[in-house]
Length: 471
Image (cartoon, rainbow, N blue to C red; front, side, top):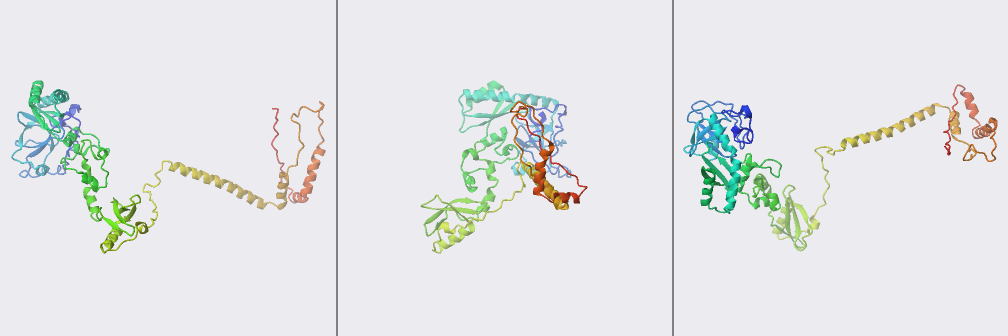
């Protein structure tokens, strides 16, 4: 992508006072701020003067690049805005690569040195102003050009419009499925825009490279960032990779098959070289079986009977090769269901290790439960240790105190008597007498235990107060 300033070819943004004829200050020497840039890994190395390369790579709008000769030995660096030769007039571009790597790029793109144009000078302030004014007109010119083509009934799409640096020529990039008659169209364009008209037809992939966008992988399109050569992609590439022939998933934004299908094709071809042919048939005792599916990564092949293709049986490619060799010797193999070996369940290893969102909460809950479980055990152990140090007679007293005698039932309203007479309190001796008798009957040795421990405090068991139902 561009550095975001007008000197780099993007008229939608401006870097303000940093914009000069020498380039933008935000641009690095490696050129990674540019669209379809090349990393200059020799930028810090100064070559001798006689071996210095005189050619420079210049980038214009979007992905259009060309090579120019620095005949005047102007000191240039990546990001410098220069004025170059054109026909007619001159053009303004940005230097995208310098040094010895330019020769490698020229050899890669088969660019002849004899056809290279020359560099006039570094762009002055007047050149920049004319260039920027021309760039501002491009969006309006593109809309007007589409209206004119639609009015003439031409089956074409104007994708992009590019002004020359001196505003002496307009280049229209278009896409079309068939040949277009431009005789009337060029006359209307020349009358509307009053400049020289140049028409260039591009493919749908070149259109996607110029427009740009985000692919299904979530990243910017390869053709608009680094891919320059467009290789043909066939449906056989999808078949080799065992992909379903679905145009909606295999096609990119350009409407053609995705270029990334070619990236892993060599790896798939190497893996498939060890597989038997997909048209292999096995002669079994139950009938013939054919290959119905291949898994490249698991190295397995699925077979099914010709008469009954519902049941599938998967085998390793090594076993399939042995079965094919038996058939070649004229021997019939066992039925597929007998050859099928029971699969041993393999334990899945979580590489992320507990990738659940609630893993921390579960651990805390388990720790709390463990703490709660340990607490009563500790209390029970402490109670047992205290009881072991006490005499047996005192243990029996506690059991006796827990046994509570039955109390007589009281009326619902204690303030109201059946005969409307005041209640007389009973003597304490009469109330305590039956309790003492019960204790004496249950444990006659309690008095002896108390005498043995005279300093032991006597605790009375407190009963909860009774609830008043009329309250």
